Image (cartoon, rainbow, N blue to C red; front, side, top):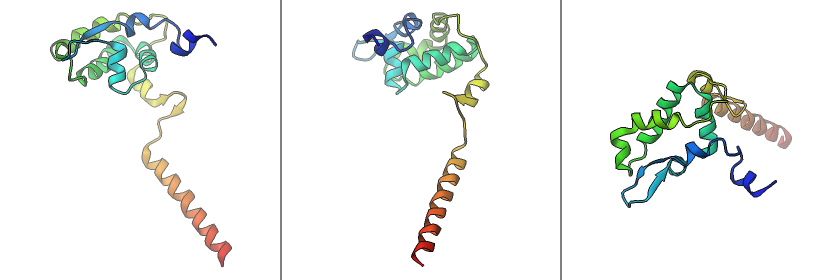
Length: 138
């Protein structure tokens, strides 16, 4: 595996989008889509891939929400909607588009299971282990 494969796991398809500048922060440093996603704790290539899979309108809404969450770039507060539309146009076109609802149902191949059921299953395992332990002791 080459160094570029490690640094850019999805190749160069998203470079134009991720390297697009969204504005300057309060210190005067240039903020790109890549650094904006990193500031939000998002994995930039994964988020770019997800945005590319969405219909343009849904991708704009999602990106606008991300951009609005960045509070230290004054230019984004004024133009996050128009900036989002312009940035979405930089995504690669070969990705199949899906609706935002379909995107929320499956994430990286795992079903979107409510946290309640996960907690319920873990409690069930713990109770079963406790009962087994008590049975072995008595």
